[in-house]
Length: 319
Image (cartoon, rainbow, N blue to C red):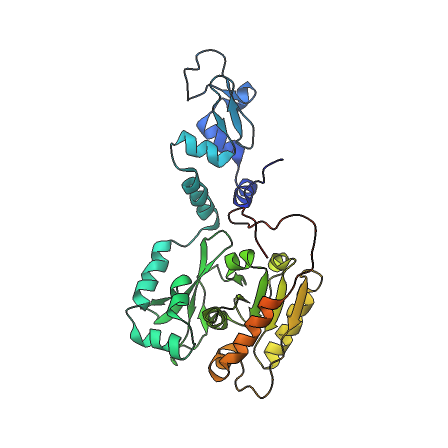
């Protein structure tokens, strides 16, 4: 059975010039039928190391091999494969350094006023704040939400307004404000999804153990590029109880139709006080418990087909 190629490697191979990289290490590679002198043994006769344009190679002299371009670079530079893989990807997507994210996290946990606001105004647990690396930027006095892609690279930091002096709700890193799913990696690993409106509702829902996901930017935003990420999942939509939320919920249902196995736009009783999930978590916490029970008890149709594979690590995803 042919092994599945790591999705991260596939993405990198589609974005880089593998021929240029191979030629930078072996200038004569193209001149002699993609065969070069092997650097891993005394290759004094006919060049015995064959490397194809993808970076995959095999030495007929010593048996040394490379499974892809990342493996080639890692072995030639005597570096760890995983480190080279993630550094290469981070360079391609211009990832934001983790040191910046971590600095904001440290700042948050020194700011009692911000922590109290998150706990008592947004009902977000300390555990969830740490898990999703929520931070605080002293210069703008805004809370920070790092946005990670499905491969675990930080590709934006949302600077969120929470004080009355903050006129805009959110600021993005320049050039990185595209509408994205949040959190992408969790969505890849979970088959049951609660689609909510906004990052704060997502973090609140996660604090109550709900598999929440949102779009950055509000109820009306949707990025068609990521619709396929919901394929074969069961989705419950719980947007705000206002016109924008109702319109956004309808849009989400239409976008997901034919992609997911199940989709349901939740209707919250008028008797429940509040207009969004965070408010409901204060006025009627048992509602979130009921939603969680409904999600957990959902039965998927049985399909005989391919296994669900995580795009990050290649592991099988259980229902």
